[in-house]
Image (tube, rainbow, N blue to C red; front, side):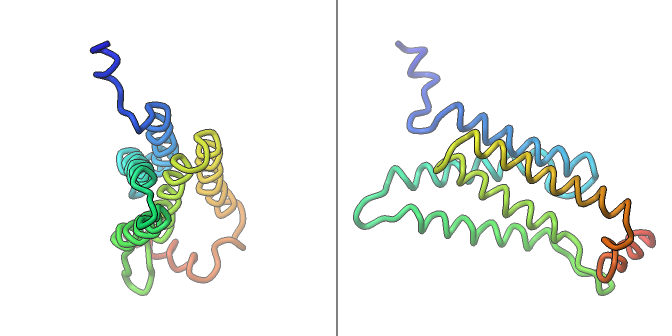
Length: 159
């Protein structure tokens, strides 16, 4: 009896916590292996933190409280974190993809709390496919590196 209560984290779920860490880790691994901001630790913590906030908000749901307001506040707070990873240097804004990744990681945390853990895993794979797939397209075709992307590639070569 004591050991069961020791490992209980009710109202949270170990499966959801594991899924949060896993989803954040697979997206974070892609970022970390490519030397981008928002690696494994940060990604896992963003998904886990979002899951905990949303699950907690659903526990306090009543006539005077609304969990959707918490979701809105999480989105706003994540926006500030995302803004912190963006930089402007020599007319080029960098870090936008990392900021967008932070934003989608939070949405995966919401998905774990509200929708389903398997949907969250599938969405995490989609995110990695987008991050990795567009890079492959950029390497294979100059059509994907026009405009601001060409400025960024030239700026990156100078650094």
